[in-house]
Length: 202
Image 1 (cartoon, one colour):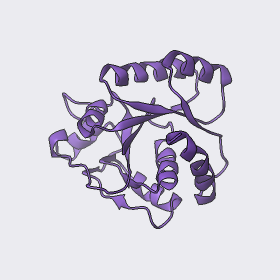
Image 2: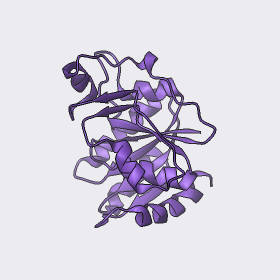
Image 3: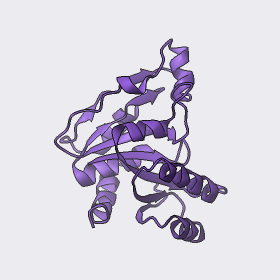
Image 4: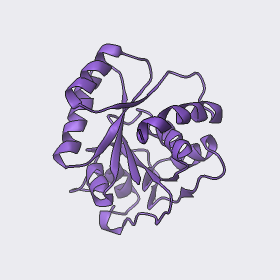
């Protein structure tokens, strides 16, 4: 199974969620497009066990910006058809860049990458003022593209009423709730991995 970790904004927590999923599923990790440093692949490597395979990026761009803008600064153009998904015998966790309508070039968005891979989306939502709207719009975009959504992961300070209304309107399951942790390390990742494992295959 190929899981694509996407989010409602840039800092929702995709990298931590990707590490948790890799640990839970003993899956390999791949971030096809990295814009700026430090690399999210390096962060995941620090958070998971040594048995997890980390695949290299298809595009490693220098500037922390929208991928289309970062690529332009590097003198390249991102072309989805040239991004080849790694051949894996294990599950593969693919981390996106920003949200689903982040542009990759003048015509294509991150959501087009999910479609091209035939991946199942996992949506990460942090609960700030306005996040209900952003979460439901993201879900609407994924459903319009007929992309399967495994569920939602809420990250950060809990907001039960926001969570309730999002789950009610979307009819999606909550796969995990990640608290606002003082530190994220391998121990924390393993604890959340044990919790989400039953929800993914339940």
